[in-house]
Structure formats: structure tokens, C-alpha cells
Length: 413
Image (cartoon, rainbow, N blue to C red; front, side):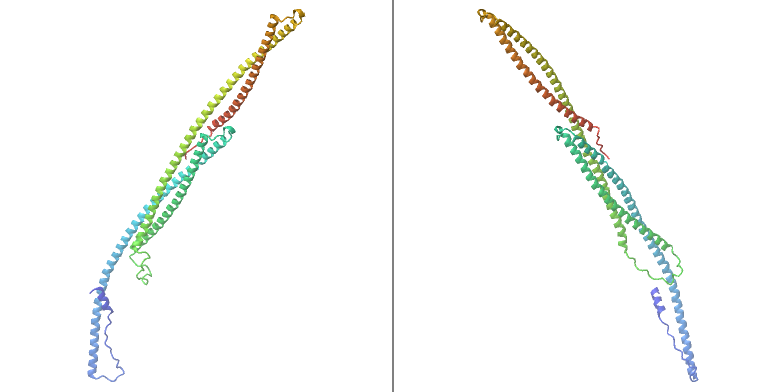
């Protein structure tokens, strides 16, 4: 008989033959007494038969349920073991992903520190560029031109400020990704904790072989859990998949951040190199201009000295001619004292008059040349003053440019 047949047989009620109580009835007749005895005997035989059958059923049920109990216990332990292995596998997968996520978070934090350092490293160069601009703003008005140095400074300043914007946006993206990594790690940790708790509970369940005190009255079928098996497995898979995606995005972001730092440094280095190049050219040009102005001043000094010597010689010659004119005039005046009969216009008189005319003409010409020398002296002095003024401005400009050499613009993190 199967277990179900035995249960049905046990549930079938026994047919008892009713026994009449005739203690207060009239005395039985002999045939009634025999019938009553026969009824009681038949009932006893029937009861014994049913009892025998029930004992057999009970023994069979006991044997069957004992075998089934062992099989069911073994099957439940096997299923618990399968579940433990599956849970352990998922817990291991989540743990590996958690380690990978935490490792990536550490790398991202290092990358963020590098990006922050690169961002902070722009402060000093920007300040030094401002110092260059402020110092060059002190140039004389005539020298305050928008030259190649000015444009190179602006280009470097622009490169530095664009680097700041790029690094700030990169750092913000890294901070956002760090939060996502932390959230993924927290989700993995929570799932791992749940899996470890489930493993502990299932391990404890597997080790239970005897009922706890007071639990005999509580046995019943447990209700189904809130999550079915596919959803339960998919939860960890989904959490790990999401974490892997975040890790992949973070890794790409780290690469991009490093590329941004390198690209910014390259652009800034190129701008600084160009600035130093045109600045060196500016200094060389100013030094050449200063040297040329100094040479012009020296030449003007030589011209003025030579002009002064010539002017002095002309003035001396003019004085000599004036003295000679005075002598000739005295000689003419002396001859005019001759008696009237002797006051003829002779050759001597004509020679003296011609001498006076020549000397007077020479004196006038020397006077004109002396005036020209004076005019030339004024022009040369004015030219020298202008050159000296321009030289002073160029030297002031050159001094500023040379001072800028000591204002270094450091680049790099």
C-alpha cells in the first residue's frame, strides 16, 4: 500500500455493533440470550480484525514515513547545500566586484589628487603672468606698444585660464564618478552582507538535526519568500553589472583626466616657449637700439665738437678780419689827411679801398658762416636731446624687459 492508501484506510471509521442494555428489561428468553452472545462474539471478532488491520497499517505507515523522512531530510539538505554553493558563488562574485570597485575608487581618488594638484599649479603661473603685464604697463608711453611679447603673454594667460576651466570640469566629473563608485560599493557591500547572513542562516539550518524545545507545536509549512529564484540571482548580477559599468566609466575618465593634464601642460609649455622666444628677441632689439642711440649720441658729440672748433676758428678769423678792416680804415682815414692837391684817387687809394671792401666782405661771410654754425649747433643739440630722451626711454624699457627675466613662470603640477 502506498502512503496515501494507508492514510485513507486509517481515516475510515470502524463499524461497531450496538449492544442493547437490557438490565432493566424483562428476562431474556433462551434464544435471545444465544443471539445476544453471538452478537457480542461477532462484534469482538470484527473489532479484533479491524484492530489487526489498523496495526498493520500503522506499522506500514511508520516504516514508509521513516523512509520518506530520511529521503526528504536528505533532499532538503542537498537543496540547502546547492543554495549555499550558489549563494557563496554570488557572494564571491560580489566580493570580487567590490574589491575591483574599491580599487578603482582608490585609483580615481589618486587621479583626482593629481587633477587637483594640476589645477592648483596654475595659480602661480597666472600670478606671474599678471606680474609681467603689470611690470610692462610701467613702460614709457612711447614704448607701450602691443608688440609680440604682449601678444605672447596674452596667449599664455589664455592657455592657463583655459586649463583651469578644463581641469575644474574634469575634477567635477571625477567627484561625481567617485560618488557613483561609492554608491556601487555600498550596494555591493549590502548585498554581500545579505549573502553572508543567508549563508550563516542556511548553514545553521543544515546543521539542525533535532527540534528545539517548544517548536513541536509550531510546525507548519513556511511561507514562500518575497523574491523568487531568478529575481534573487538577477539582483546580485544586476548590482555587479552596474558596478562594472561604473568602474569602466571611471577608468575611461581617469585616462581622459590624465590626457587633459598632459594636453594642458603641452599647450602651456608651447605658449611659454613662444613668450621666452619673443621676449629674448625684444631684449636683443632693445639692446641694439640702445647701442645705436649711444653711437648716434657719440657721433653728435663729435659733430658738435668739430662744429664748435670750426665756429671758434671762424670767429677768430672774423675778429682778425675786423681788426684788419679797422687797420685799413685807419690807413684810408690817414691818407684822407693829405693836402687837397695830393688827394688824388691813385692806385694806393684804390688798393686800400679794395682791401677794405675785401676784408668787409670776408668779415660778413664769416659772420654768416658763424651764424650757420650756431644754427647747426642748435639743430645738433636738439637732435642729441631727442636721441638722449629716446635713449632714456629705451633704456627704461630695456630695464623692465631684463627684470622680467627674473620673474619666472613655473609650469607643471
